[in-house]
Image (cartoon, each protein chain N blue to C red):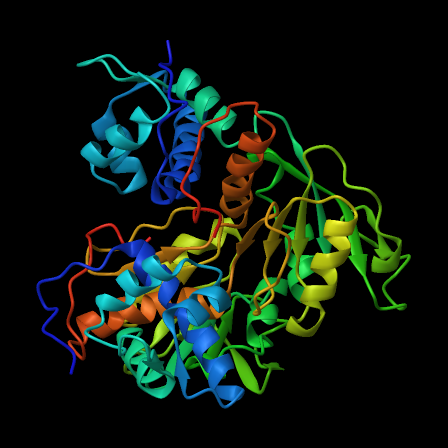
Length: 223
Length: 223
């Protein structure tokens, strides 16, 4: 049913919205909804229906005009695109408060992730368990499991070393929570979540509202 | 010097990159760099120079061809756009591991944010201090300070109530870390950081590399 999209570039803003659509579709399935219109799904996700239809058009030709999307089919297709139709193993480096918060985060497993390994440098932490996983010294990092993702939850000073050890162990996908840029080879996918940057992006929108520097942005940019 | 940009829409992807440029410029200033070329700045930020010049063009006409950008001027202008040229007060609801990690996060103050209030529902936590701020019961939330931002670091089950209490106290900008959508009025700026979604976006890129569902994306989408 899906058309050949192998030459279509998917914009990063579309990719970032796919997890939101998936979450709302899974909620709908939990309420035993089988079919959903683009208007209903747009309403649930806080988007407009035209944008939603355009985003989903990258996945192929879905939905029937006047009827809507089959919830199960759309969940299956978005999961396939997000590479989470199977459960991916995640290794977390850094067992401070943030690392511990991630290990105890309830939302991972049903989104396709399970934390299988955790690392720290602190001899007081090594050997203890968190969320059922034993903390191992970062110097003893094991070879990446197939499809695994590495997460850096260290302080800024330890992030580059953590990245290098993850890459040496074969990880080619890293989510970095440390407030510093890390340098890796060109073939490593690094995504950076910087809490201060998130506040700064909100600050941009607040500055507009306060009319200290009024410049319009797109309606959907406050995501 | 800046031209009138009041009718120019700033794309959300540009807004999201401004904090990255700002961080690299501040690093450069720390190394006593006064002038920087778009190529040098692009290299530091891991972007290409054409995209960087386009992003900065939304802020006005900066830089001199063949010379580069004045670091101080660009820092000042980006800070103004991000609404962080003064320090913004931040209130955090939820003092579990994530809330505590945020309170102890080193990178906020030099990015223009200071956590001035923290809230929780747990009577064992209320009255204690974290990072020098006393934990107050969420039922006693105070009126928002001017320019303040609310942060939700509660479990999913408490997020909607936290949002309503923040809005009732006058907050119109909220950063939500809980793994659930929150509903607010139309004039409230809500930004959602969902750790599972961040992993899913990486999963999208991994799925491409694994050629399980090869579809190209833009070079810069793995940010």
